[in-house]
Amino acid sequence: MNLLRFTTAGSVDDGKSTLIGRLLFDSKSVFIDQMEAVEKSSQRKGLERIDFSLLTDGLKDEREQGITIDVAYRYFATPARKFIIADTPGHIQYTRNMVTGASTADAALILVDARHGVVEQTRRHSFLAGLLGIPNIMVCINKMDLVDFSEEAYQAIVETYASVQAAAGLQHVAFIPISALLGDNVVDPSPHMPWYAGPTLLRHLETLEVARPETDRDFRFPVQTVIRPHSDDYHDFRGYAGRVASGQIRVGDLVTVQPSGLQSQVHQILLGDTALTEAKTGQSVVITLKDDVDISRGDTLVAGTAPRLESTPQATLCWLDNQAQRPGAKYIIRQGSADARAMISQVDGILDIQALEFQAPEGVLSTNSISQVQLKITKPLVMDAYRQNRITGSFILVDETSGATVAAGMLD
Image 1 (cartoon, helix red, strand yellow):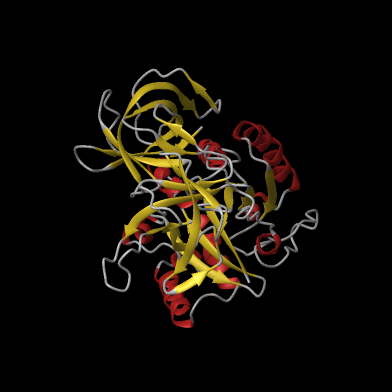
Image 2 (cartoon, one colour; image 1 turned 90 degrees about the horizontal axis):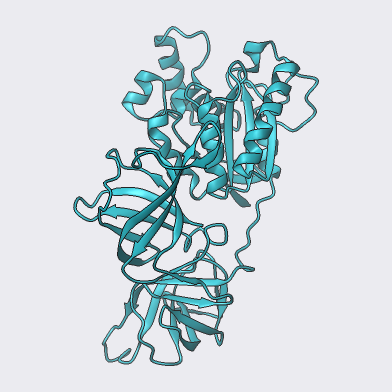
């Protein structure tokens, strides 16, 4: 059974939590006692129907305000596939939470209120989905029951979204008209929209083809730690522990240590006490080499196309901190297992959310700003373009004084 990770996004009150709750309920992924508690809560609120959003809004403030604040991860399965959902907030002040939830997603589900159409947060979240390289987008046009299931209202949103799709660089977009409240086209086909011939949302999720290019990408292995037991049994053992970020490696393959450029052959691949002949993307293993090479935490074992060694990289930043950028401030850049001191030497542009273009900066970076910047780093880091490798192409900036994470970045 394969796995699909997808994130939800959209403007506040577009019905994300209700939709996820409906998916969980209709796919029979809710325990009886949990459903009974939701029914009682709905009755206490004086509602005529079950409030499915109560299945996902876990924080006290979320339940009281009827909004999503934190990223909530939900799990369910059907006979066809397993799913991990990142239910992310819609409010603009929680855009950074959406970045967190979308960073590992295979697909993004963007909700649009059929009454309001494409709004600012729709544009912002769509652009972020493009920046984060999410390959599959589902635009669910929700609350169709409030526009009398009108095909004209649906088509108007599809046409308006075309310009957003082009500006955000989204490749594969599917449009699905739904009513999360009533369940139309969520799991079962809607009798109210005979004009729609496409799949239901769940059917689309079950059949969505997800590219898993683990084996056809260049091998990248950021070293987390060096293992030296110094015991009688393993006196000369020197192993390099980490997680395969991309590609695959076999015993006997030639690897290069970056940034030093030294080369050696793979002698062993160990998973605990088990010797493997190969390791693939996502596996945490220990690799030993045939030669004694000076390797430490922060180095990267690579094969295939050489990565970039960057000390002044250009990148796209999402500013996460509540405090605005302080020009000249010093940061710690953390990329893979490597750390270095860094500063933002230049801001080239800040995203205009209406035009979906980067404009000349008129001030400093503030919370949720999306910008193009140039960094200055004290030592070269091993990097790939983000669209080639999400692990070696991404980083965070940490304030050197407070230790707070202030920005998440992607190498251009």
